[in-house]
Image (tube, rainbow, N blue to C red):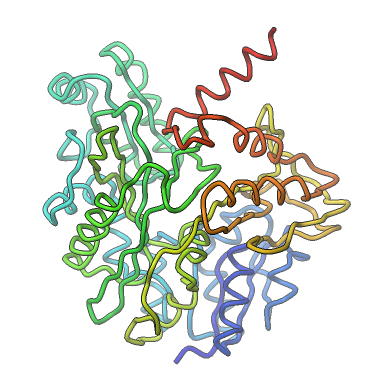
Length: 452
């Protein structure tokens, strides 16, 4: 059994791991940069170690400093959270070489899923449908143009070594491909130190749907009902909900079964998320798999009544995975990501939170490491809180979310709460008529209104 977990992360996910470990009777160690000295996860963990200055490359991405913190505190496990080193296969290997339990997928799985093109080809062999596109990574524009001509425009270029929208470009013509290919290469190189790209057929009007899985060391994989992630800006998710207002029961069961089978074939362990594009006819295509806990995992927890972080820790301990009750989706859950940014220009808004009131009440959950007097540092992502609303049906969940957002008070910084309230009042969103182009159309309509 694990006795002490070092959390190689920060913010709300670090705090979530502290709380889940405490429920399991496991002690925790918080590592922190100088910018996070007064962070909540640091204050609430059993032990704490400073691992460097604010710059992530010198602290949260500094493997040597993190391992030194392990030696100091004698932790026997590491939880990477999401972001930073969570999907770094080398880090997972180093942890194992030092006799540590890495609370996540094995290095081989992380490496496979980290190569997006290789993951696509592997999942194709495992039985999942993929979009037409390149079979290998592309570093030459001439080859890219041949593939694009074969599958037909529009196409989308993606970075083979990463995600999060970095290195992604939609190209609707050969001339546009010529312009965007070197830009995507440069962005991929800067973000992932790898300029390799791959190309897929671009599906206009598609939904972004993902399936959560849990796999244990005995080869058992369980898939959960879908999360709808189509409300996003520049490939960054804003609002997620489950179940999707678009996916029917037949499609849901088919996706869950095929994901379980494919994940089992590659020996998937720990938490993971398989992401798909789903067209207007509900035909789905595998895009990528994220070998870590997702930001939006709480909505799956709400509709199933489970704790995925505790399940992840138990699996890493070597326990045979299972829940003491039938896994059934009940009700509806929505998550809004509250970011420290201007709601109109999306410019980051770091700074001191002078006054903070977070919502509560029946069906409302808040995952946040923020508090009144805390300074949101400019050095990391701008996530301040995740607000989750749960209700027996979608309409009530939306109303609960709107009420929760209206009751949230954050003074001292700007947040995107007004944008969320605007989306939650949109007639197309309320009717469930939206796709991955929703925000483009919504923002264009808002701009048109403001010019009148």
